[in-house]
Length: 163
Image 1 (tube, helix red, strand yellow):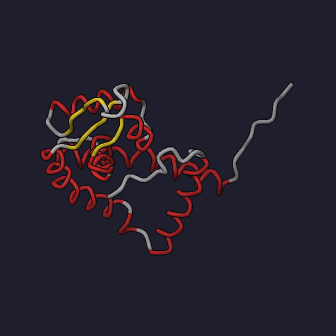
Image 2 (tube, one colour; image 1 turned 30 degrees about the vertical axis):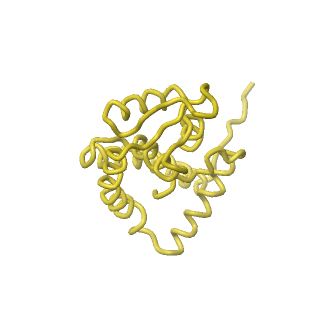
């Protein structure tokens, strides 16, 4: 007995493999630039950016994990490394001691400000500048649709401010 194997049309396969290729290549390029220029990973940059734009530059570990699509375990390790470098402080919430909050330090703000121009230049070089205005609008629409499908509860709404 044979079983039918699902297939994609050529246009579906081209779109899918293109998306996968970009999803695999882009994070490595962003990490490479940030590590070379600022000694931080793209994930660390995203964490610092989220905390920077939170009220009083402070956010709970849960909120950061949701916004960055991270596990609390991974985030805890990263925040411990950032704390050892003096970029953030971790502390118990004043309103609930069971909640750990992360606060951006002055040194963390300086490092983030220093890292941002190179990061934006890389994003522009790799993505923004090679697309027309219509392409950018289509990309925004497509990523919004896919983001809603992947995260229907809109946990972190997919936005890291300042990115």
